[in-house]
Length: 430
Image (cartoon, rainbow, N blue to C red; front, top):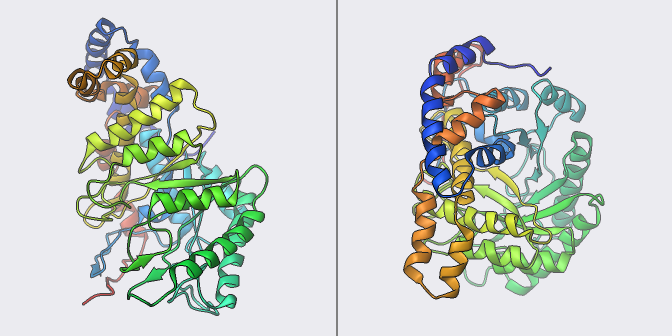
């Protein structure tokens, strides 16, 4: 049996105080959904099976380009991170896997596997880092990595990615995510075509090193750290990469990596249609690549993304198997609380999308009835599915109210007493 960090007795007591009210709310919602021809238990069962991965780096305090203000009890290493991830998984029952970032999380793979298995956790996609320089790194990535003009630097970046694959094989991972910060800050700094060709050549070497049952995810980002041009700047370029590399290459969609007002749900639809959707990094954005908590700014957009995902799921779209992960920066909140709420928000969007009357929607679309088509989506979105989410947690051993249970447990104060305080750090702009 897997170990737990928060006392099982505390979780049981927490749930006992809330169970009666939850059961009444669940029954009431079930009655209303039944009038719409929806079986609430069927939706709950799907929610119970839906999981999203936690990024190891997400349990630490984030920062801005100006400064970072560390929180109390920050994880000292990957093993502390795994314990924090275990708390999230225990209370939400929605985050069964952890995604590692190398070299940040580099350690003996067998120790990592043992540490995660204590809590019943598995490992999601491996993430390589060639956007910053590691300690004792021979060649710098200041002017790029996989697209660098210097062949030796490109070789170093390729070998790092191949190392990530080898680590992941021991851990039981089945995917590698490659995001690079390569680009330029001034017109004329790089030759666009040559840089992209160098990138593709390097990626072909990485792709050749994939095990047969692995997938390769490439991630696009419009800007930052390069502010004039970025090598993998949009979903079109990302799609070209996936097509060029082969059947095991897919596009990863980070909700924050787009210009304001871009129709992300349509991008998702296109990638599904052409069998190149690899998965998601869920977060939210107001102005740019903000990495805010999922659903905190535009929960309707998150719902619209899941509307496309559920449509593909229910229609049995060929090759449809997206990976789901959170990718956020927690600057002013407790990262564990933010990640718990974000996991719940992703589940919420999934549950709401399952409530869409797809037969009615298709009819309105075919009849060009724009008003009723959009109202069909709004009916599902406006439904408060919290009783479904809470009941799913209760039935699987989680907490009815994860944040409340977490605060009752005093976990943050406990680890703050055990983990030395971390000094603050300045950003790259002053």
